[in-house]
Image 1 (cartoon, one colour):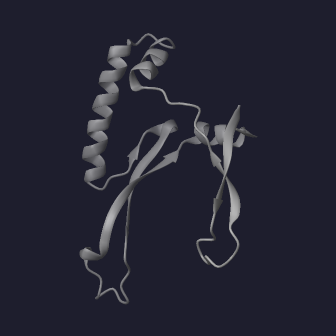
Image 2: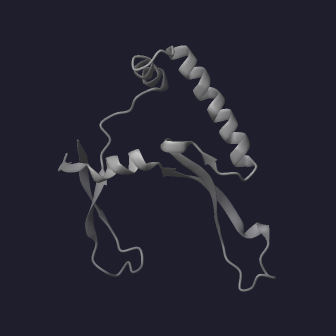
Image 3: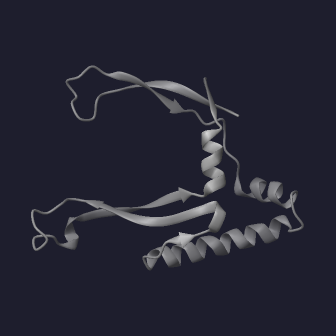
Length: 126
C-alpha cells in the first residue's frame, strides 16, 4: 500500500546557517469521519454502528479520566496512550518548580499489528 508524499524544504534545526534540505512529508489522501468508520466496522462484525459509536464515546470518556489520573491507557493489540510533559529545565533539582512545565501531550504507542503495517509500506511522490 503506497503512501503519497510531497517534498518540503526545511532548515537544519541545529544550525540555520547550514543549507536548507528537502525532506519527504506524508500527504493525506483524505479523512474518514467517525460515523463512516463505525459503519465500516459494523459491516465486519455483528455489532451495530450505533453500538460501536456508543463504545467509542465511552472509551474516550474513560481515557480522559485515566490519562488525567496519570495512568497509561493500554488497549492491548491496538496500542497504548500516555502523557508526556514539556517545558524548561532547572540547574538543580532544588531549583525546579512546576511553573517550569509549559504543557503536556498525549503520546500513542502502536501495537504489533500497526507496527507491522508500517514496515510493509511503500512510498510514491504525489
